Image (cartoon, rainbow, N blue to C red):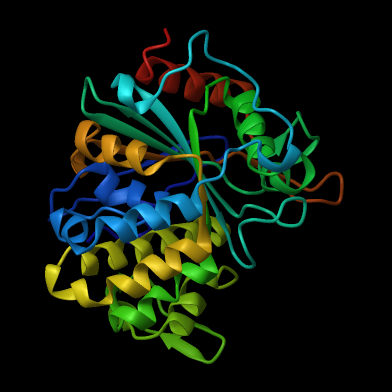
Length: 330
């Protein structure tokens, strides 16, 4: 395995492209999308479990981005696209570190990942936007857009304004609540890059097993001992969620699916319908080696007394051009 330094080269004002080899081949939605879009369909085993329960969960988590009088989502595309069109699309994945997902104006989104999927080239791009990134549209950090600018639609508009890229769908997850799944499946195993302690837990370097949701939450929350700070924490959140998916990809764990659906229902909201997610699973298949992952790392700035991640104009323009080309907008 590559060492931590090589996997996390973060030079000032430079985006870092991370490559992580996977032993298993799975669709993008099996690898990333289902993590935050609902954990609804992971192979035929879950579909066989109970279509009724999938449909019930899908109805419970569905919420338009501009629900409850929130500000409208700004139209960036000349023509709206949907997953049924089988055209390139984008999905904004957001994670909160605590609390529920259905309130607006109260919480920040500590994880923001813009995913673009091109079914024609069978490729995907994931752009992680650090929570401290300054955005001029709200004159504050991008993680504050949810609380300051109308919930999910505020975050979508902030990302669209920052990168000049349309956001077609969103999914919002309470990361703390999702860790409860680990209690139901009896723990997950993963590789820890460096030794650290958090709360009452100690995590040695190497292969470890997170046996409870509380232990997993401590694992993902650490940032002060991590040389990559918030970036490292975001990496560990993705790592744990992918480990959960690996566990559920084994049909022998089908018995704990009831707990999975309960947890999803309590901790996820999205404007993707069950039909949309089924279309994604069927028509937007991307092998993991064709997924390019990027983190936008700019220059740290404390001149105002508040820490900001400042992206250069050239960095924003380059990222925007790459995503627009991937969405076949150019």
